[in-house]
Image (cartoon, rainbow, N blue to C red; front, top):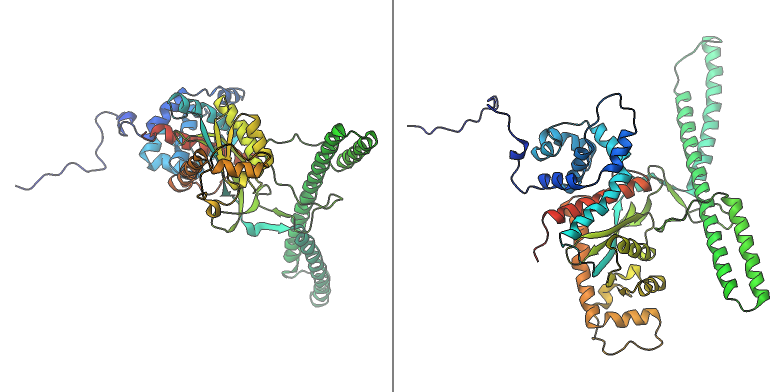
Length: 486
């Protein structure tokens, strides 16, 4: 007697409608994300939605949309089109979206509209990690990684090349217009005055003129950015002169410093009358001449002007942003994040320490970072906050492991770098530096390899910062779902 098979007909109807809870096994990440989002305070998103006109099409539930975005980023699906397709084809996405299929434009619009509110949810998820015992807040490691922008380095042009391209296009347009006049005269003699014939001169003139206007617009934007950068530099110089004047014992010299400070402020006001508030994170400044014009090598990307060309981990030059994280050693949870377009890491440590302290409610006991963060200001900020710093003084491959263990007290009268080098030779210093690579580098490996996030989808510094916050929140959700066994 032949064996009978289980029914596999796709046309077979179900007697009773199935429950969404039965579609996935117990403990699945999708169900976990839905449960976590159900505990979050979404009043900021709700208030923006309720402030709109109640008429029109009914919106999707904000709680469902937040859960959909969090689960999508946690599972490595970032494109709004791919998220919308997964809501049709992927069982887990259908559970999160409550078996609805939002159009990709609705997904993209929700992410774009509520990006600041989504960024603020990072702290709520972090509090859940703290409540679960994943964060001790004792030892924190800070590091940065270059993440590719949604732009190509081949779409960047230097200030000098902009001027050359504008002059070249102007010459070509003049030549084409002259050729067009000659062609028109020849057509009048051949066809009669007022008659027309097909030629391809005028479209070429329009194309080059459009290109020239676009370059002019980008050059003007670069010049405006350079003026603001030069004005900020002059204002910082004026502040420095005032600080020196306060410490100056000679009254005449103090007066000269105050005069120079006033002159710098006057020049800054002429370049940028209404300066923007100073940002907490460092930002790349356009290299400028003393008069406030961009230097010839100053570049601007036509696709994402806020991105900058940086050297990534493979040593290649790419259009990137610099993403920063502070990671707790106990559970490998991100306790603070930041992002900017300045490639060097040195100026990031102080603001990252402030953000870590604010997120945890207290300063960590130790803070570890690589040689890129080492500076006198960073050490002073750590000591002032009663945090013991362990910052590599040189590239670790040349100085690690230290030749010997330091004993006793640090050398008296040593400068900051020598003092830090002594700290790294202690038993605790060696332990902290060994833990650094297996803590913070693991986070970047998970984000880029396991989650597959290697390039931003959004453009502009503010939007990219919001997307980086989404990535860090999704990472913490994964850690909260399956914490490391300890």
